[in-house]
Image (cartoon, rainbow, N blue to C red):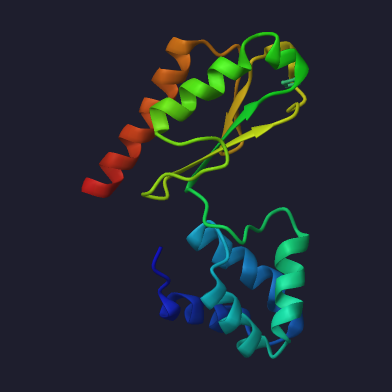
Length: 161
Ligand code: FES
């Protein structure tokens, strides 16, 4: 993924050079790229005048940040016990097949990242899938396909204007 340093600089300009700008600036960079690219972190360290190690410490401490490239859409499938007995293994396989990736991977176009987690706290709705924070319960093969295709079609429309 290419990083437009001018965009990073514009974000940093908006946040100023005080140390307390570190987290808000990182959050905005994460929003823009869906992760924190190393080139952007270097820029942040220079701009706020803090050591690179400190920027990395903050970036790796908070769950909101990712140091690995991630997709625009985060697809999470619950693999906890209640969802497992209702077929979440098949569900995550199917999601992976539709997106063309394995759990833990991101699509080449950086649109989707697929993750498996243990219990999303809505066991009665299992098997559960979450996309960008939106919960989809009682998932079936047909529902999964329909929901994912909707997200994929929306991306195509966005790309082609
Ligand atoms: S086990 Fe899936 S939501 Fe709890």
